[in-house]
Image (tube, rainbow, N blue to C red; front, top):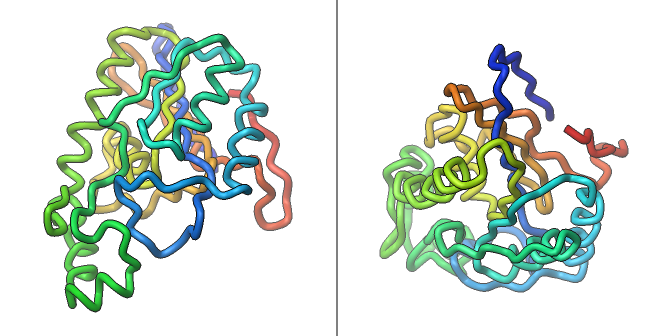
Length: 223
């Protein structure tokens, strides 16, 4: 999916290319949270293929969640450029507290009605001993502020998680956090955000994947 907006500013933006890690072992229906879940074989192949597809992008820095499923992709990108990954705990997945490691079915069985309540108020709902999305936005945005301060007019990679990426995109574009599930984040996907110095943020690419979707190949647009 592509989003293009006309910006009148003559100044060059700071570009953040936001990536999600590859497929993990036993993917689907589990609140992985901050657990250090391993990539599957296909997830490692996805990551290496994506790093290769991005080989011509002039990244000046590579940030990543410090969990291994993100670091694998980040290190593959950084290695091609002689860069060192800046691993940050602020980019870890949403902390689901006592729900961590549980399936949706197990959460519903132990905490009846909790999933429905969370979906009704995503921004403020906090699982037991976990965090809410407003808190996630605060910690993730510190990385963006760092990038905008230290990497002006450069292109920077950030490798994160599905939930974290949705929150970052929502905050950058003004989408209410309660609506983050309108933003899909497939494994090993690419998003492109341009931050202009005079204020506007343009979401130029959302959830692009190198893998065929609906039986169609999708060449990287090379923005």
